[in-house]
Length: 184
Image (cartoon, rainbow, N blue to C red; front, side, top):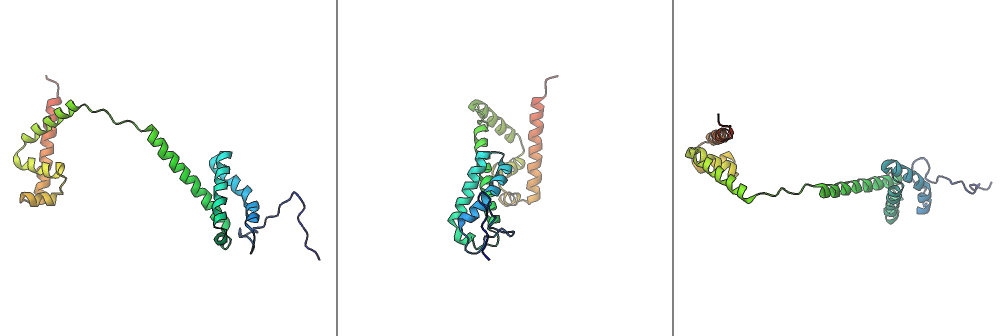
């Protein structure tokens, strides 16, 4: 009995149910079987015929470059789809980063005189604090030291440093609130 050939115009699915090409199958057979499915899947994911065509081509190109390894895989169809989806996600990430760069707000133009006034105001407020509070604030908040390191520098306990810094911040906030109050 002779094997029957597929009728012209009708394609046979050479991948079978497992999605794995038969032993020795050529890349062309895999391409013919999987191209329409992958294209449809990418079209559903992207909503763009152009984008889905590009992603499908890109995925098949990568599979073709690695065909000797891909043909031996248990699920080459899954590998193909993973490549296509990774390429799609990568494009989305690049587009998102590009959009963020385009729509970022420009940094506000800082008035150098206002900065000088603010710095002077902060120095005056720090000078108005008792010495221990001022030192605790300078070392922890401005110097960036942890309370333990500031405590060693001042020769006191870490909890005392935290307490002094907290009291200093509260005094500065109170004096700023007093200046912001309208005159009665």
